[in-house]
Image 1: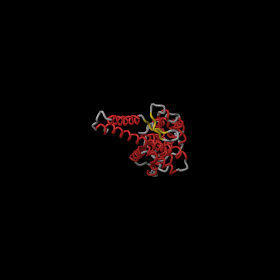
Image 2: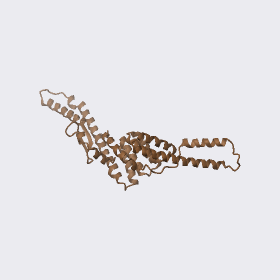
Image 3: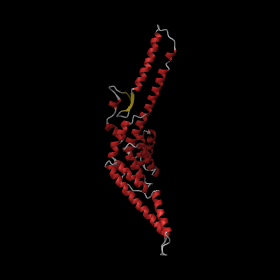
Length: 289
């Protein structure tokens, strides 16, 4: 398991500080939601059912087409307004209100990746990890060649603990925009560190399980001894050493130091995991959050 609570706490500040830098003012799309189209079509059918106009010059097909164009324009304009209102709310820390605005905008322009990407960032701030990943996935689905969308997806996946998926997302982003230094120096570097920590943690768990099995099924316990011989003492020493090793493993935490090195530290002692954990600023710098 990842020791990611420290990472979770330290991600929030960067997102809030950099909220406006992720393109809150970008252009919206021209699609409308299925419900909006159905509402328009219902109105159009009602107009046709009312009977033909008394004016023979009226072109009903042209009128319906024009009405659809007006609907698209209205939806795009309203979606843009809602997007900007949501961005303003997010910048002032009113995150749930911002998400509500963007959900309304998504109903009007459901193929707009910018709305999903902004929503994912705010959901990550709120530690809504699963919805954050889902929103970011929608962003890259509608705009697969957008490196910032992949970056946001990778960060959401890291927050969820899906380190391997996050590494892949950051690599895709780097492939699309290799000149963006933050992808190399912050996002991918931090993901690689967490990947190393994950590997070390799995190895520690494996050692714990093996040592526990050796204690429960110690070969010394299945032998007959002469209690006046040195063999009894040797057997007791062997069992005690395994028990000591197991207790040390249980008290060991896998951490990442300020230089990005994975270390096993005994908790509750002078070099405990808490004292060896980098400062908040060091985590923020390493994560890019």
